[in-house]
Length: 98
Image (tube, rainbow, N blue to C red; front, top):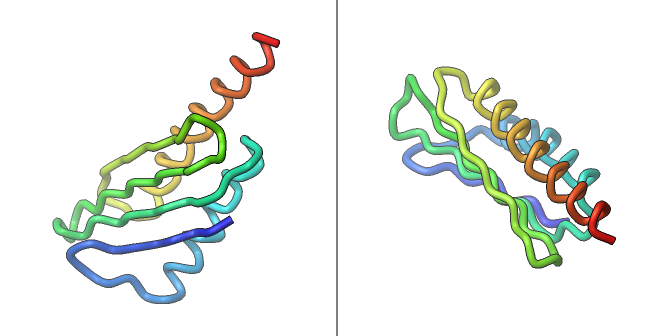
């Protein structure tokens, strides 16, 4: 699984990038065959960062969520929660229709 953490309109410290990667790697447990996770941190407004996470799978479905808030870590947690909900719903659909 390939994880890319990028920042737009600013820079992220290497330690911050690693913490973000450690948090999003857990998304791989919800859906099999995750090939890539892209994290984009928008720092245009310093007091209100935005986080966008895209999970690319080998299935026909890719998952994407974004959230904006005053706290980077709160933003990331909310985005991960949204993605977990999408993935659970997708997985339930796949198992119920078989």
